[in-house]
Image (cartoon, rainbow, N blue to C red; front, top):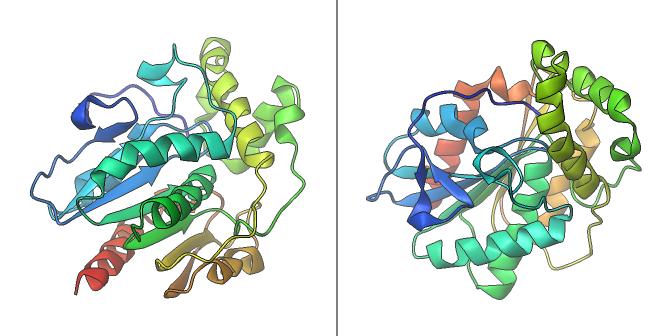
Length: 262
């Protein structure tokens, strides 16, 4: 579930001084804000390419979870509900503009839980929820990768092909990232969906036809979680299919957002 971000030079703008959000395409005149939630072990820069590709009408805000990169000194959050609770409080003041939510893998689960809180507690319906590389919340698998030793965890990262092979052979770098990877695996593998009213926002699902974490049936089951429009788009590739189809996914996301504004 993890794609490691090497240190690169990029413009980083904390939103209103907040540690949780990064803006790579500051757009104060934007019509919509889209909040992007990283995968397990991931961090905000994963969404840097997406942010740079979007027009100024959509501001991309990338979530930075605690315990990684510049937030490394903070305690990791190993529970999806606690993570969603915290992010809901961060995003509530930003509902002065329409919000869209995009999450990949674990990020899709966090985005879903945040969407529920926005609708139920803030009476704010997101203009769209984009769930990438993750089965529907109601489709549970008994996964326990987080209980494996480091060797087993690294083997799983190799299988998903989302981490630079050179990194997996660097003990010093592994020591830095494995704690957050294991923490996030624990969070998403112990997550349990609780039956609740369906979302009202439209849901668009992106999935890879070779993703070992998501079957076609598990991806289509997202439709059961909304009263709004539903779309499923399948791409060739594994768990990180979106990096190979970024341009097409960006276009689909933008089209959905613009449609919601008409």
